[in-house]
Length: 247
Ligand SMILES: C[S@@+](CC[C@H](N)C(=O)[O-])C[C@H]1O[C@@H](n2cnc3c(N)ncnc32)[C@H](O)[C@@H]1O
Image (cartoon, rainbow, N blue to C red; front, side, top):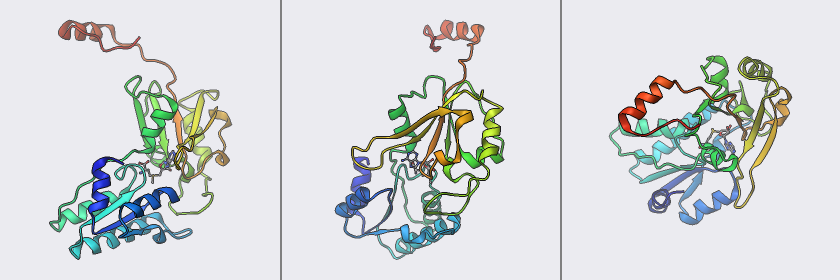
């Protein structure tokens, strides 16, 4: 958490939270005892969208009652986190001041743990179901990150494994972009203090639904570097006196 995020939690009249583990939960409760978990809104096989809308209304009831309200969500509260954006949107619509403090997303952890600099080769990131059903355009010469691969095509909340019957379709789509032997990583950042990341390094053709959990993010490295267009590169060097292409 940033210093601003810690200060926001400490100074709030009420804190609502969704954490990814007991340590984070007790940290928030230590920072502010006026804290309440939003986890009870989840239900087995309950549509996540329903849960999220209930969370939003619950949080906003506190805001509308005039309480200085803070919502703490695991990772970055604005990354794959509909309730945060929706609560802010609705609060502002009614004239309340609402701000978002950034956090450390799973993607930030992935860059650190897998030693990837998105400034080299670029990095595309999609929600896995969205990537599949909307046939997102990708550039195989950049990194590809697929979020929520462990809940692919399943809009419900489940405590255990999800229905991953769409998994073969995702593999088929990826198979049109990468060779079967392309190396990929199923990544899970550590969620407790000093816990190491869980990484499964495998080949695209060997990836199985049983390899992923709802906390998994898939990383696919670049296939091949792009050849920089010489004329543009030279023009850029000419106009600025410096180069931009890593070779
Ligand atoms: C609803 S999104 C929440 C993301 C979160 N707000 C963030 O900033 O990381 C859940 C997805 O985030 C990713 N995720 C969550 N926890 C993770 C972890 N420990 N390691 C890797 N990816 C994780 C997975 O793709 C998972 O399906």
